[in-house]
Length: 356
Image 1: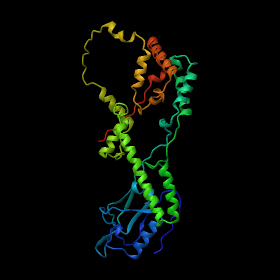
Image 2: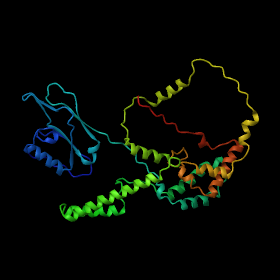
Image 3: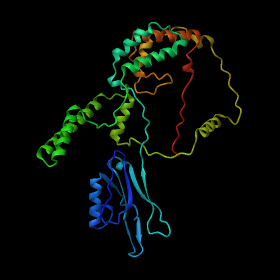
Image 4: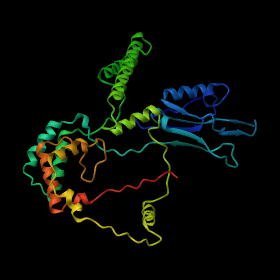
């Protein structure tokens, strides 16, 4: 049995067909020569079999009055974990049932993210302190203020992410991994290859164990709730990516329902509230102090969603003395003149659909 050659390119591959071969891997009682040839071909082509023994037989022989699985699916190893084979409902005038393959590839838009762990915070503060001295603290200058922060962030905070990342692969493990690849290419059965492979697995295990220990010791719900909840999900073995559902509801329908929910069917009299005039403005007659500002900044939690000004809480927590003084003067001027920046009057509303 001659098998086709698969071109060696970096793109994922899917092979579906009637191979008319027997193998225990896809539901037969024993192997035949063609089945062995198909298995060898898939191994050499770096393809994985997608088969579910719980699925019905894909071919029902009218002659033998039995079901078989000659129709099989192979995919590249990189997408094997995302692929699922389904045997669909039978069709008339054919003994074969339709076969479909579903690839649940998570579509993640490429966005450059700040790597705050490798940020040059002294340089970030220095750039802002030098430029903020020439900018008056006025609501009209808030857009210029945000541009200064963005420019300093682009200069001092690296952006990007690993396209291929192996957890626990630190610098020593990387050297062992490269050494193991070289030895495996020369002789995969040599004792030196096995020895380096064992050292690599031990190094990965020790690094992951140390990282897990540090995570358990340093996790604090009051300082970083996002990291704490991520740890809880790992311990409880919750799925990181929930099953996606297809929804037919559109944004206009959501907005229409929100308007209906806000309407009242009956007119209710509004109770009269006697307000004490001096108590309404008593709390805002005194300007904000630098101590209050520092306390508020220190209690900010990192990892939170940013507003329309695209300033992260990690950046605010690293503001220098002049930046904090400028922010304090801006707050007091907004309270005194009852005028706020235009950006603060806008918001971003995202309607989240609830399952069901």
